[in-house]
Length: 344
Image (cartoon, rainbow, N blue to C red):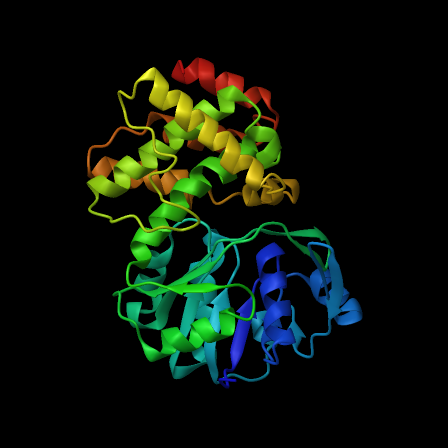
């Protein structure tokens, strides 16, 4: 086992499952929850995990509510698994607790790597992508809802020793893919999140419920295509995540047969991950803002730089902002309103 001093910040649906697996493998990460109720529950019961039919609890020796409470430093790495709007602050505050050659790992939905690199230096950042789903069903109780890999990469594309060491730790949870094209992987994941995460938050439904609706499948395809078009116009070479990133891509001007085929694919893929629940929906249910600015909002901003039209993503941003401000409810009829606005 590679000796690593690890700090894990953000013990929500993903962070709780990842931390439990790492501890089970014999590592001793320090956990920071940023939530007193979660800290208290884990201290009392451990990390309670549901993984398929398996139920178990993992004791946690070192857990704190705030980063300021951690009485020691000299960490090799800080895994940042909080929402995207808090990652820059977390990175800055984590830096003094790291070794001189220590680094942070950005495990966010959306693309945050550039703003984190600007804040603390690109050499202190490794990008991570979680390809599986997790939820915190109750305070301190976690469920791994879907399968998938973890993608890891240096921002400059180099395959470094520290990247390999990080992969060794993360492999205790799920298979890891080390890539020299992490930006391509980030955009491939972004295309998925801009559809599943955002549309799921609009309707309040799981992925399986969403893809049964033909209107939603059409909305998925249009949203996804705009992200892919923006990435390619920006010179990004899309990387395979769960599948070929072009599998669900329906180009402009596609004929009826192509559209019918892609529509069917959306339903098949969606039913494979039918239990998956939008992380943005989970945020809204807890009274928190979503990561829309780092998902569809990021796409819209980047598309403006390369003159790619993104009317569907822009409409999704506006609707999510309306929900966050209390002007609109989370409900399935939001899809109908989008259809009317966009004339889909």
